[in-house]
Length: 333
Image 1 (tube, one colour):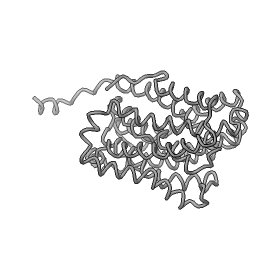
Image 2 (cartoon, one colour):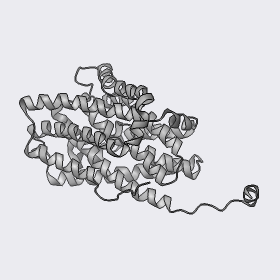
Image 3 (cartoon, one colour):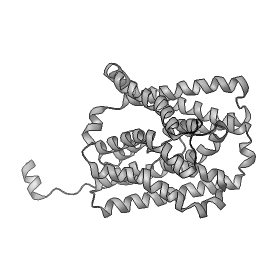
Image 4 (cartoon, helix red, strand yellow):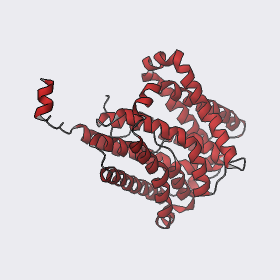
């Protein structure tokens, strides 16, 4: 597997550049309308490609490990939200009400797919189970995240009902994903051959959504509302939240008797939050002027989780394999 970078990678630098462009050259008026339509198409393309890339055989291979999947889903959709609520008295004075809502939104999101699988593979964990858990978490999030957002934030989406928000998300995310799965029969081999440059389609879609969201937020006075001290506090909060979640997932997996490969999978699949899903969902669930503030904690948490999990994955990868027992050695001989 390619070396996992520990420092800022090209995509992170591109994200920072897009935020800078949105700060000084935000899209407004008719330009904002055009970018809004482009964003909708980009999100559909993003999830179509996710569907086309994901192998159903790989998902089925790990589907039987139900105890592992239940723990991952519990960490993602129960433990994270409960932590967000429990830490409110501490977090709100540190980052303010608006950014705290962004932290709650982060806690309601599904896990990542690509990076959870990549880190599990690098760390020599249970890869089929990681593929199944991450993919199922992403699909469950389409239905669970709007409900959790309503419960945690009291937000019911632009049209005024949770069901309407779920319907929009299904139309914008799940339908293109299913279309990609269907099209995989004809384009799967082509997608596999061109993975190296198709990732730019994914990244370009996210960058477009981020630019549109931050443009709206800048027009509404985002940077006047968030001083540097609050950004630093938010970064520390994201670091502390990730550290707590990593410890809890590791503790629970060990306490429940999972082997090392499964514990690695639970650690990486249960502690991560998806930028690729979170940014498009925010476009549907929140008013356009609020999206920039809402996704800012997610963007910071995303980068921190990549750097920290890269270090952890490399440490696991360097472990020595246990010596086989005499009986196993004899049977192989």
